[in-house]
Length: 450
Image 1 (cartoon, rainbow, N blue to C red):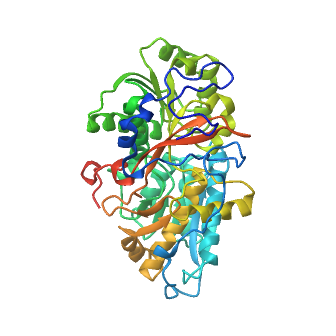
Image 2 (cartoon, helix red, strand yellow):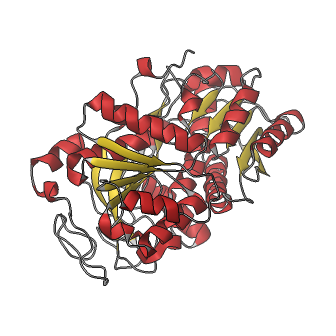
């Protein structure tokens, strides 16, 4: 399997600053790769962002997508009035770049439903800015439900906002489809009205931890922000290591406050430790600032870094060469030949002139998965739609995906990739895949009771 710059995976590469890595995954050439790939086979090379010819694997040739397995025939009309849907995204505050991407995807999801003969209804969407703030996000949810009459709410990519919205809808006849990753949404705090399209923290950590165990290293340092998602990620890394019986030692943790500007103390602690791998389950400005400072201090030459959001186009665009060589649990790639992803990429390119990233994919599918539940129920009654969504197989950009009945989590696969040099921004080369059923926690371990 060739790297996107023409090199062979498993051979050390240079990024112009000398030899890039101490280890370039020698295991990729042997039987461990087949084990890690499972039934997926060799995952195609791909770049999740930028569409220059220098990015690897198969180019950008569009193919016909097949949406026939869940489109069927149009349902009977659910009424002459459009279905009102509130879409909550942070278009201001620290998460604004991610929220803007999610909004673009959600807008395309609404357009998909409204232009399709497969649905007997249209969506009237109201977009609200959560401002990356849980109290504001809750107020916006209340406004779309109580003032605009929305029976359906989607979005809220920040974990704290999503938990506040989920709690709000738990006692109302409102279906909430979340775009946040915190494990609590589908754990002890789950409720019958909340569903999650986004890949949760446990699934993300499966891609991270399994890859570390497959040959990346054995002494792991965890660095993340001390917030809802960060604490959830740490717990799930520890759980995955124990559950799988992996020979990985956690040699240290650093968990600074959100918005920390100087990571010098944390970088020094990691450099002075026995760590050979740093797990970095972080997002947004906290991820960008840490990675830039770690690269400047030479830490990324001392240890391998594997994150959960480094793969995202917005991350690689902000980091540039500072991301090259890092690994990442990867939730989406625009070159995937899964589900109806090719149709999504074409629609996104036609509308925005580029290619979508993971947050846009989540926005697109959370609208469409909710709409499929309305279609399957044959009514816009949220109580019946909630029942219809449980266990419903839906074609998404990631493949055929159900919401599990036990916790309402979408059973998404995850990949692991490495950031490689590309065109205007670095590319991502996919290396392994963890199938959806292997990545998601067993129902009995979630603590969710529906």
